[in-house]
Amino acid sequence: AAAMVELGDYLDRKPKALSGGQRQRAALARAIVRQPQVFLMDEPLSNLDAKLRLTMRAQLKHIQRQLETTTVYVTHDQIEAMTLADRIAVMNKGKIQQLGTPDEVYNDPNHIFVASFIGSPAMNLIKGSLEKGVFTGPNTVVKNLGKASHKNVVLGIRPEDMEISGAKGSNISSTLYSLEPTGDLTLVTAWAGEQLVVAKGPRTFRQAIDTPIAFTFLKD
Image (tube, rainbow, N blue to C red; front, side):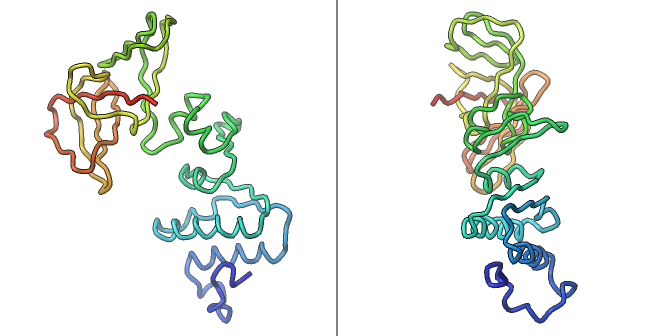
């Protein structure tokens, strides 16, 4: 068990002489040696720094595959849930809002809470109306959505499904609020009425704040 969690070189130490990540692995080893039918892990990585959390997440997934033991993993970190789980139960106020695979929960959320919670940045949710298949909301127009009409609807669009475009034929025409370069991409935030929407733009994209910007929604 110590070798499995890479603690073989530290067996002569007391737990208090171990780092936070090593203590987490020691706790995992204590559970492994009991050979349980089910593991229950309650936010096991919450006290670790970001780099160590990433390493431990990979180790946990590898160990779980080795042991082939059912694991119930409780977390507030959606990235942990998406990367570690075979099935996710998204809960709100003690009730399960959706149960499904990570792909199902991400691609087809069945509840506004799930849509707003899963994803980083979260899905953009724009309130508006639908008239004969045309959605109209603050700074937003989307055509060819069927033939239905509803007074109060919510349009959900993921940041990665929004492309920066010219104003002509765009789905959102607005004003740039902020740019956040992250290295591999640029988070582009703009107004949609009184709320902000976020798109994932190219990592080289730069534009002055408070200047016009437009987005087109990508289609599957």
